[in-house]
Image (cartoon, rainbow, N blue to C red; front, side, top):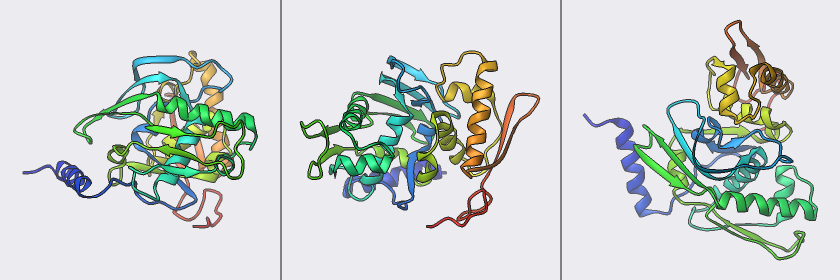
Length: 281
């Protein structure tokens, strides 16, 4: 008997031969990301003021069956903000075509100031992601998939993005394979934009589960890429981030039990946030 998952993957690959690969569609208030990304330390919770480490063929911590190997400069949550917005723009067209945007509008979309300094930071983020090699291996893919997060990008030589400056970014067409049919997470963008790094990572991870299962503190510490070695020092940071998610109306409750398992309760129903407010869709 043919494995249904293998059959679906074969049909997807066959379809990709006949038409240009494209991302799934999602709403303007959402951003979408493969589950393998938000359940791993690909984008860490490091402070962007700290020096970034260069990793060579390093296996990253991940929750679940996926093995993630990475080479490149350490990526952080600010890089993920940039990548999520690029994917959001790319969903409107085939992946073999570049996305074009005005840096000023892009910066506003990710919640960064629209100054020359942040224009340079945006360009740096694209550069870091272009110079990456990420390999994903899991049962769903039935193979190893090695890609760069950004294939190529072009930008103006001017220090700041003017109203008529346009940048181009190419996303790897193979990125479509990571999204599959249901193997990606839709994130509420406005919630994420106002969170601090650890809360952002937890937001993505818990959003990737309809009903999150209990998970150990040490597992979260490793998978988010925290450099806090002692759990007694990480727990207060984790508690503060979980409280931040309650205040953002993503979680309704959380607790860490006596066995160091983290339990969370998400928003009760689609279209209504954890504070009971109707969400505009």
